[in-house]
Image 1 (cartoon, helix red, strand yellow):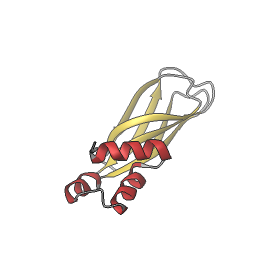
Image 2 (cartoon, helix red, strand yellow; image 1 turned 135 degrees about the horizontal axis):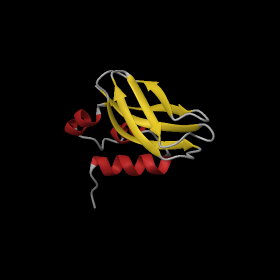
Image 3 (spheres, one colour; image 1 turned 90 degrees about the vertical axis):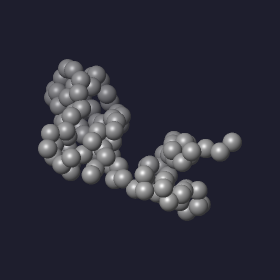
Image 4 (cartoon, one colour; image 1 turned 135 degrees about the vertical axis):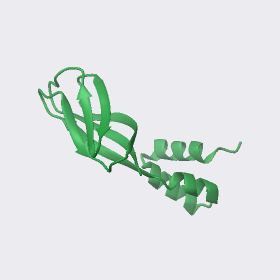
Length: 113
């Protein structure tokens, strides 16, 4: 059964721990990517580190203006719920529902223009 490029990239990235770009490049090297898919996946997807320090309620990172949030996942010690993830101009902010009891580290997946 043939898979779409998105399914193939997700499987490769999920099983090897590769980034989306690494997974895409590996498929491109095998000739499993068409020109149309190349255009779609050529977008600049980056993973930004955001740390909310102990006793804090938010943490920030710098992004390119016009970036869009695609997702967020914890890297270590998520002891509070994430209340919001937002971009204002060039500042990416992760806000927790309550003060962190220890450093909370997140990766925020961002699509840069």
